[in-house]
Structures are given as structure tokens and as C-alpha cells.
Length: 82
Image (cartoon, rainbow, N blue to C red; front, side):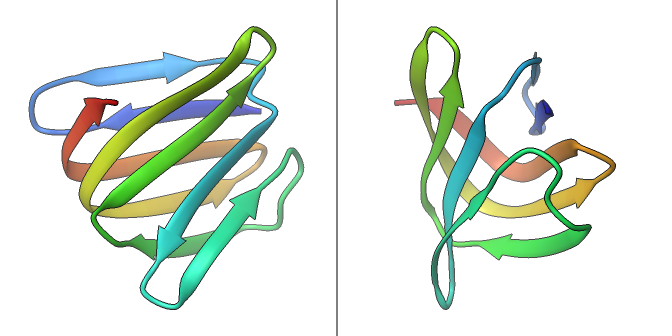
């Protein structure tokens, strides 16, 4: 699946993402390829991205995840590499 991270300061894109794991106000959740359409609020927490070459971790502040058609978009006030 594709992943796009969008903040006020920058935009990053990844292809061939194998999973995205994050924390909402009610707990941790995962998004795998072909996930059903969904919208999740994010707490200020790590966002783990599984890629073929390994895992990348980002710190997200005040974010929202949109899942649609095998595409995941994260929009947040701040996104920093951990």
C-alpha cells in the first residue's frame, strides 16, 4: 500500500508499505494492505511504518489517518523522524 505523511513543514511518501501502526485515544491499532476505508484520530505518539527494508518510526502530534483504496494518508501538526 502507499503511505503519505503530510505536515505543515513537509510531505513524505512511501510505496510498498507493509503495515502502519499508531495509537488513537482508545488504544493501538494497525493498518495492513487492503484495509477497509477508515478515519482514525491520533494521539501524540509514535507512528511505526513497516517497509521491506525495515521499520521507520515517526513522532506525530495532533494527527488524523485516512485509509482509502490501499492508500494511507496521515495529516498532522508535526511529524518528526524518531
